Length: 494
Image 1 (cartoon, one colour):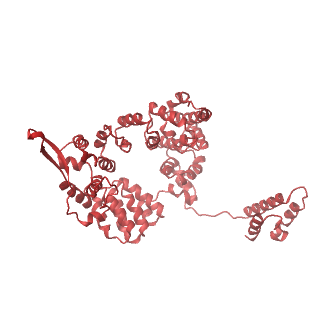
Image 2 (image 1 turned 120 degrees about the vertical axis):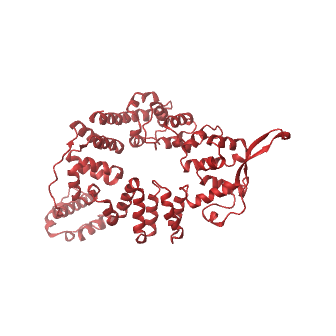
């Protein structure tokens, strides 16, 4: 270690001020060191680099390999078949291209056909899965029995060792415990909550908050009772997270209280029209005065930040944004479309339209989203993900020219492959912005691009001179990725 410190000091200070000396080295290296430093044909800097290399290789040669005892040093014989040689070559090309989305597609195809990765590629895939957590289960599945055996030789590969969920929950690291909790929550909702409750007193505030966040998956009324007990927790982070989750449960106590206020404050009344000869139905908004303080402690603010919105209307706006839209159908005995029409026809009602859109997004009220998209007053892009597939693309194409950037952010989050029409729109836009949408962008999202898109790439050539050359280079790269994507399908018999 001392001689390494000497080398570092010389590197920092310089060979002129602190040259390496013979005494800085092990006795066994004296002859080699003398040979290097007696060479008059090279400069001091080169002598320093050769000396440092000498020490590094000397130390490496003297390191004793770790002797780790493994109970079973022979992998069990596989019962499944390995993938074809063509599939193996495609895997090699994908790894060379460093495309994680294509690798995921390859692994999915391999797993779906109950085939295995050839053993020589297991270390590379395990190393990939260390950083790419979404690949771990697929790598484990495609690795087979040899993969599980091999993973015992490297602690970072232990994700491929079958460990009982219960055991990992009790003995694993924070990341392992959170991962297994997330997996259990997707399958056994109540079991995940019970696990958290069992170890609750042993956890610190940060861990409690992180575990509570997991409950958002498949959150239900069954979670509400326990979450409501956390209102007295010592940690403000825990209380805030519990309240956030309770506000996502329509049957929770706090949402019920919000509903009761709105039930009394928003009323549908019939009023006489001109000269009393006819009548019309009108929505009345009049906030009740006897609101308990607990409501304001739950995050509802009392004072409006906008001069044109009264404090009472601002409170109503916040409450409307916090209750599921289905409440209005039950309370007013009207359909979603009828309620939206009532709001649109009233100056007072228009004050609360935006709040209703927030509630639609929060509670994923798909049927309400459809009616909202028909309104011409404003484009509600945040509601597009709630639409059926055919309507989703219809509105994306409709607003793409005016809202290209936010819609680009939306389409890349989708898991479904783009249509050719949408792909052409996206290519035309990204081709004009080569610095923002570069090779990395297409690599990361190749799973969304249909293989047939290779036929439309040339037609998306931008008119701007500065972008033409960049797009020509990008087209070649996209084609290479699409060929690999097509080869994956061919390799597994599609």
